Image (cartoon, rainbow over all chains, first blue to last red; front, side, top):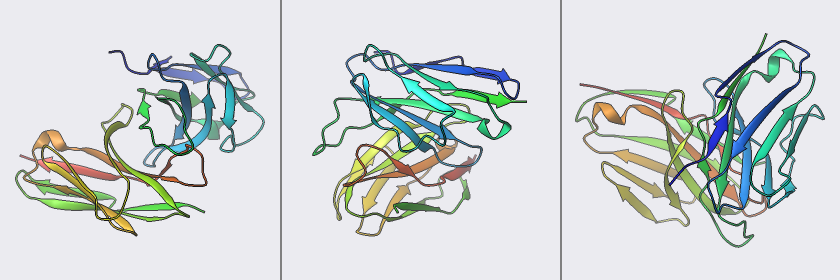
Length: 117
Length: 111
């Protein structure tokens, strides 16, 4: 079946501009995650959703970053007043329902490469 | 704070030359350890989940093992198509569903 999809695949923006990155999870997956990956490093957790609500947003670096998932499916990561340090690959993942006692593998999308000039 | 360290950072092998990648972790209660493969310009691809010390899992030329402090990804008789970055991640009991990743090992297999 279809995997996690992310759009756009590449985004170039000027410092100070606003950007939105979109994620479509695997059908039937109720948990959705955002990670950020800088060149040569492993992904770093930003936020995850169970359904429509943000279950954990402890990884968001500051209040310029915000994410929504209004209908419990597609999610949008929003970055205000972008800075050059925000340049990275933003990865989205999804998994079956979150369960505090269980472990569900996270499946990743191809990522959006954000470049802030 | 949960920490994951992978070594070596980069590894070059000749085709057929077996080797192992290391993932050392410090976590306050391990719920699961995950191995992913990442090709250039793509997202991580899930390989294995390990839950408890002593567990082993295999897939083609790859075998993952787990102890209380580290995990190994053994690659037997690798082929050039095994070239990729291999990422290790942990999920802790007290950290919800977030994954903490290591920096990865970049593997290059030459024919």
